[in-house]
Amino acid sequence: MKTNKKTSILGAAVKGAIVGGLAVAGAMALADKENREKIKKSFVATKGKAMGMMEDLKGKARDKKEEIVDKAEDVQKIVKSAAEDIQDAD
Image 1 (cartoon, helix red, strand yellow):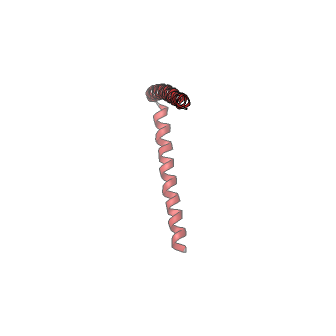
Image 2: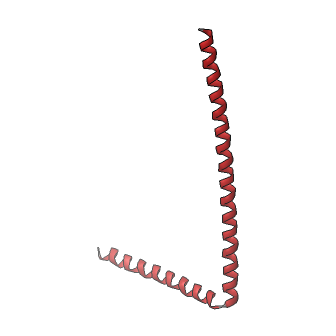
Image 3: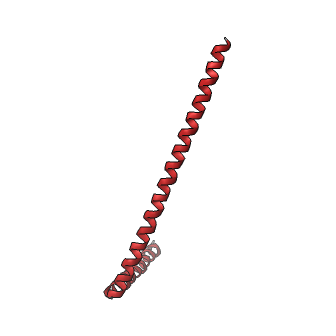
């Protein structure tokens, strides 16, 4: 059991060092105004692309919905016509 505790402490220390290193690297990158502007432009561009993809998906979903509604209406007309034909045959 002692080994597991040492392993978990060591694992936590390694994870902490990695997170701390990333935090320091991020702070250093943001300390430079030019880097901040590059990061900001990158985030804005990524956001724009994501919004464009979402609008595209919404449009495709809307088109599919209309296609399904049209097909359902066609099926409804066919069924109604068949029911009328059956009634007329009686």
